Length: 358
Image 1 (cartoon, rainbow, N blue to C red):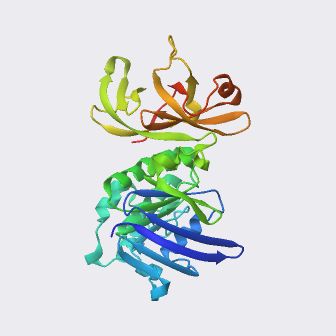
Image 2: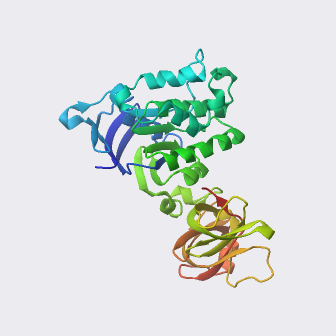
Image 3: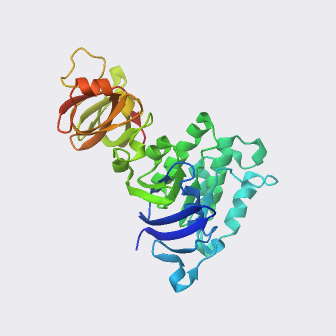
């Protein structure tokens, strides 16, 4: 049976974790919530680093914990890799020996990820002879991820691995995380409180609040639900699937089709036929009752208002259906009143910016 299913009830001082979940057995699932919501506690229970007061955990058909049946695999018997915020590399060993240490824990017959594959996936071949104190923060995290992969895990746990990095180092590591998602049939549970990371990396999403699951499902759906926190604030965005149809080299533009129409964006790397995920931030979408002529905005889509909800002071978040794809628009309350917006109202969404996620 494919999937990661579990229940945990656990008290930690004044905090109580009480969760039940059923997650996909492959791809990236983001565990999202504010600080103190129980994200790390849940990951530690899954790893066996914290033994819940009561619980059950099944990973792709293998029972790791079932208190009712007296089953509890200690952490060293769980075939998992764990990547923390701090890379936690052995300072006295070079990169090669750090990786070898992780690999030595796995019997040869159980090795499914070769050391060469881990090194290639994370792009760390030039770093193999260096000590951790000579590496940048981004390089250290890439080595830490490679070391976790070298153990040939059946489950990879990542606890905010980019939280300690600045924007430049974060941008350095993110493409390698995308490669893991694309090239390994390995379930990854990725703890984060950064909406941009969730939108870029995760196929599935588990939302936690005060130790309880508030929602779970495909990332694309939960990002745009107005009753959930991810659909609010300056970082709110929709993720849509699109296919490159043709290029316009003279203008360095790529044209893509999605269910709501055509999207044009500057790009010299996309190829016809390529399928990509696009992120459209709510703050980059404006609304009009009529299609505007003589505008510099290339991407304009007919849409229908499906919902409105209060956002930050003076602003409203509007949910839109564009040919079956959901978009968000963050506009002022005054504009919403002037346009007399309500569910069912036809509008034109004017998109000023689109990001390619991969």
